[in-house]
Length: 421
Image 1 (cartoon, rainbow, N blue to C red):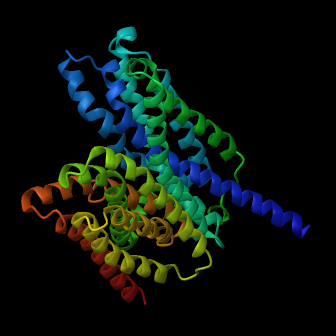
Image 2: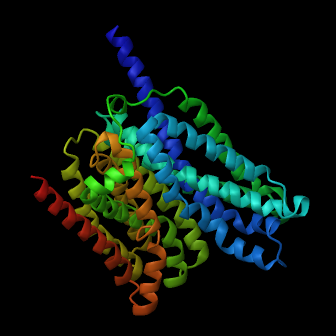
Image 3: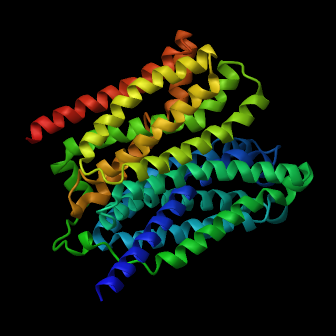
C-alpha cells in the first residue's frame, strides 16, 4: 500500500512538473511568435492605406497583450486565492488555447473586413489576460505541491520558459527554409499559432486531472479582497518581491530579448554571426537552468541560496559584458551571462512564493511578478538603450543598470530579514 501511494505521488509530481514546463514554454513562445511573425500577418489584417490600421499594427499587437497581463494577474489571482489554484490553471490554459486557435483560423481583412482586426485585438486581449494569471499560478501551484523538490521543479519550469523562445526561433527557421515568402504571407504564419493551440489543448486535458494543493485546501477562511489584504498587511513583502522579480526579469530580458539588438546595433556585429550564436547561447541557458534545479535540488535554505545567486551574478555580469564588449571572447561572455541568470530564474520565483501566507499567496506573487514586467523589468531593453544613447557608455549602461537592481534587492532583503527577527 505504501509503495502504491509513493508511485501515485511520483506520477502526480511528474505530471505537475511537466505541465509547469509547458506553461512556462507558452509564456515566452507567445511573446516570441508575435515578434517574429508580425511582419507576415499584420498586412493581412491592417491594410496599408488605413491610418488607424497602421497605428494599431504598430502598437496593439505588441502592447495590448503585454500591458494587460497585470490586469489578468489581478483577476486570476483573486480567483485562485478564493476558489483554488487548479481552477485558474485550467481556465487560463483553456483561454490561451482558444484565443491562439482563433488567431490561427482568423479570416483576413480582405475576407471579412473590419471584423478581422477587431477580432485579432480581442484574441490578443484574452491571451494577455490569461498569461497574466498563468505563470504566477504555476509558481504557486508548484511551490505548494512539490515541497521536497521545489528547486528541481522550478528548474524544470523555468527551463521551459526559455525553451519557448528557442522553440519559436526554430519554427521560424524551419518555415523560412521550406516555404516561399508568398506562402508565409498567405498561410505559413498561421502554423506557429496552430502549434501553440495544440500544446494548450494537451495541457488543458491533463490539467483537469490535477489535484488541488493541500496548502490551499487547509485554508479555513479566505479574505474577501486578497489584494486589499496584501496592501494593508504585506506591503513590505510586496515591495521586496517586486524588486526581486525586477532583477530576474532584467537579466532574462537582457540576455534573451535585448542582446541580439545590442550585438547588431550597438556593437555592429554581423547579423549572420548573431543569428548563429543566439540559438546556441539560449540552448545553454535552457540546459543551465535545468541543471541548477537538479544539482541544487537538496538545498533547504532558500534564503542563503538567493544571496548566493545575487552575489555570483553581481560578479558574472560585469565580466560577461566585458568579454562581449571588448570582443576578447564574445560568445563565451554571452554564454556566461545566459548560464548564471538561470540561478535567478530558479530561486527568485520560488522565494517570492514563500513570502506570502497561503490565503493571499497567489495575489502577492501575481502582483509582484506582473508589476515587475510592466516596469523596470519589462522596460529594461528600452531604458538601457536610452542610457547608452545619452551617455555613450556601451559597457557601463547595461552593467550598472543590472547591478543596481541586484544590489538594491540584496539591501532590501537584508533589511527585511533584520526587521523580521
